[in-house]
Image 1 (tube, rainbow over the protein chains, first blue to last red):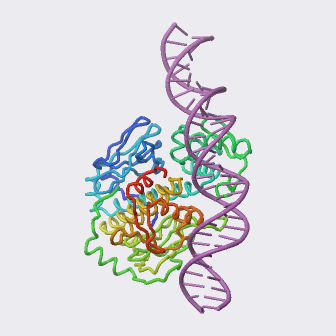
Image 2 (image 1 turned 45 degrees about the vertical axis):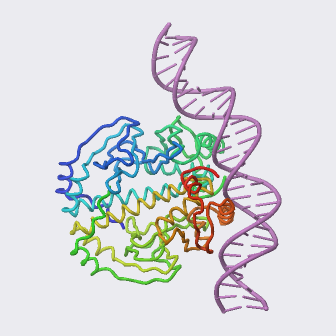
Image 3 (image 1 turned 180 degrees about the vertical axis):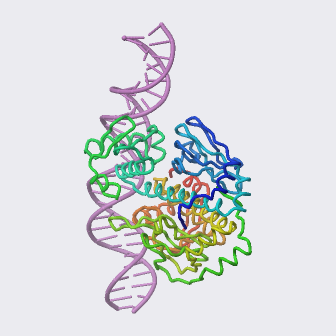
Length: 217
Length: 217
DNA sequence: CGTACCTTTGATAAGACTCAAGACTGGTGG
DNA sequence: CCACCAGTCTTGAGTCTTATCAAAGGTACG
């Protein structure tokens, strides 16, 4: 599937606006929780949200990072399947699920728009799968940076990672120690440079791409 | 998002039937290839399809296994993003993308139906992510069996794995040697038993669940 | 019966995880 | 302005798992 990034019709957009609420939310706030009755879905305008599940051992399994333009709050049989938590300050449109369903059932342009969004989310999920499939830590980190570079564009080749090491660790599914070590290693080898505590720059694009593609240092 | 598994309206279903073609396809056949112009999407009726990408080093990165009821042939900007290949003999509905788009743009029930399918695919992708996030091999294998058990139901607790070791290896992203070793180990510990070359049975459900949940042997 | 492929086993080395301690940061209050 | 504190990040040493290479055992098919 997919599909022109066909915009909503004006009428559809107007109707959506009628039922949705714009909210500003602080960092590290739960938007919705797994197993809770799903009443809203969220369309992110700006900021970074993570979607995760709790594991029996208390650790978190991160399913994805979501950014402006993404939809979150997926549900199955009326319950949220994941938990959504803001990482940075976030602006969202909160859309009541029932009204949305009613709207979408009658307006093809609305359900079409939703379809495009979900499709996009699916592609994100597959990128994440790709990331996890790289078992070599430097490769996985390179892929993460590559992902941030594309998803969260920033001027002049700066790669901004607006989150802490622990959050990052859960996303890439490596212990924080390994992350730190690996970043130091990448820096030592001249592949990337650290501009700022939370910003990097690719110094050797060739080696970087090799790592992303699956090569070893 | 998600959404009653709302059936298509009868009218929508009839229209879909008009434009789609039912095909039977042999095993190990390419349905569609990454980067090719996307002309069709496929609704699987029966059989098993894998969606993958080629890596620069020639190995395959499997994005998912697809079964009856799943939709495949996702595209972006008019090109397939993954390659779809049958593993077993497969029955599919082949639906021309352009006609589908036209239909969905006008018929909310059709685009709604698509939305449900894609949402389901997304959940599958997230299950796969969950699988890969388990870095401990026995845990990953347990999770794979668990997944096959749910997705591909079979009588009396038999877990059928209708594919070869090499294909399996690409899906779970472990070398075939590790798979073999791990399965032998699981058997030796009495967690699962091998009924047949390609069918297993859980012998110790408690330990099995522990592994799925993230515990170690 | 032989051959080709798939699966299993073995030995080795590389890499990642764990636990633990040390450095750094940013923010607080004296 | 400085000292302190809590949290975050980095480094170190050792253990364990897994990847890799190589070869033997099995199986299916001609």
